[in-house]
Image 1 (cartoon, one colour):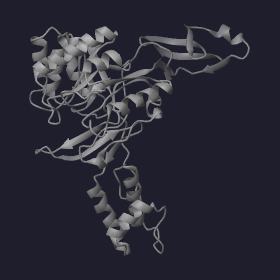
Image 2: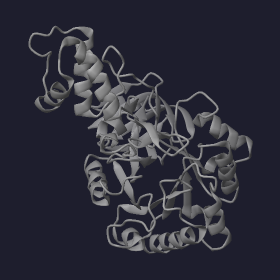
Image 3: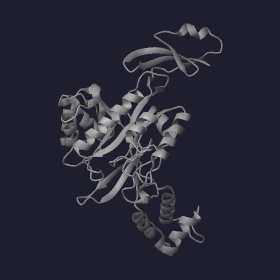
Image 4: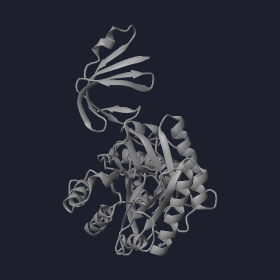
Length: 398
């Protein structure tokens, strides 16, 4: 099938302005300022985009494709991502990884999920390991995972986070050396993706590793660098040493938002060519109190940021909804969960409070939330995955 896309505002990724694109099958065959002569070919499909932006498929470097979360117990585990949640945001290349939970979430599951995304037409790579050190692996060794499993291009580790193994600079240098050597043998980039927590050490282990080893800065990729002004300063220091820093994309229009964090980094002299942004899609964003207890969490999907309501809170909401109508909350709560009623109980009208009760029951089944009083989900703006990839066969129309 031959297709001609006319009047595109093309980024490749440099801005090329108004261009026409000729597509043959699944391949970009020709790009030019005026390809109207091709319209004479019989059965060619012509689409006038009217100045719509066309750009390469986006690369999202940080996606919990099998889900994440769990910081508030089993009910706070987040769902895995769906194909449409990537493609409808223009993401055609994704890097899958694990997070806090390396027990109920496995590398085997992550590998198969990435294989499935590849079969659907995306490019899907993954990282071995998770927050823990020594890192969990598929073969029993980080270096062997990277060298022998084609889809694995590096390792994930957590630094300066109370959920981490408190990895030292010496241990980080040793891990990075394994990653560098094995990636050289396999012909891969070889990344140590560092989840940066809010601990006071910040990037101190990274700087120790760089000062006491010969591992180049390009091996490390610290992410969540917008967590605090102090961490941003450390990130800029690392960027000036030749390293790449990653910010978690957000829509917050405040000093804590990603835009403000990137602006601050640029004002401090960071090289923009070594700044990336990723979505942290389907991973949790937990909130901890002063004592380290998780008080709630959200996670990001394609359409909105979701909140997971703790079962205790859902139970309280259900009790408020059903007790005024004479329902025994203990028994009816259990019955509603197991029998999955699709309407009000017999003899009870669909009053507003009962509608809330059924919304709670649906949300228990789907592990979704939060709930408003009218039983609807509270909708948030999306955390978008941004980051320009190489010019290839995938283009997005905006």
